[in-house]
Image: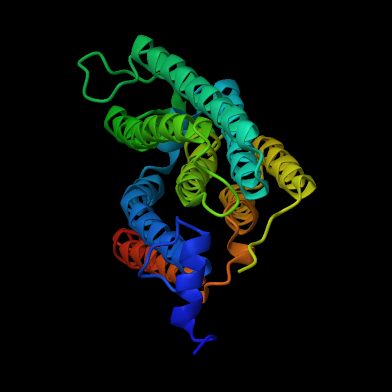
Length: 236
Length: 95
């Protein structure tokens, strides 16, 4: 009887107070939490998937208008934001690693760095939105106007309705992405507070790890948004 | 019970690879590749996404096979969404 799973579980429960009684082992508990997080991310994939699908359909239908509208975005700011987000993914990965190896102060430092990078991304995004409003590139507003012609067809002017569909998708997709970033910054503020209390340690850092999974997912969404929205017609 | 702890060097390497990928995709967009422009852009993006999933999200080291199955299932259904939608919207202009 000494080697039965239940006996082992009880034994572990005394060693690790974070192990809930309905899990046999720490590993099983961690796997269950991780699987639950992944299933949530699946719903997120399908959520963003609908918008990516709408993008694909209209990109195919209004190919030239999308090209011209896309080139009106600020490529420099978009690239800088991509770099900022990739850096924030590294700092999150490092924060989780610090929990794994028990460097509790470094967790807080890396999480604060992540929050700063996340806010930097949102700030740059706000500047880009401001530019679009100043340029009258906001769909639905009375003054909407996009100058220019279809790429490589100087005789065909941009269709204003089709361009507005591009900008609708641009604001919907980057807006939902930004909302996820805002939620992420909130999450990390909470996690940094908890980490500063020394809650996360080698035996227990599941909230931190799942917060990290969320952030990396948001990063992946941007990895696709960046080429699809900014880079579709940049060549001569 | 053992969990995988990746070395710092690996994280930094993946980070550098993601930065190189970003530079590459911006450069590739300025070159006229015809129909291959979007293909190259999506190939680079997918490579970056796979690096993030495998190493930053630790899927490469996940003991739980269910996690991998959930991810593959999600991609499968997402591709069904795109594939069947385009089978309709993409062919409406055909005569």
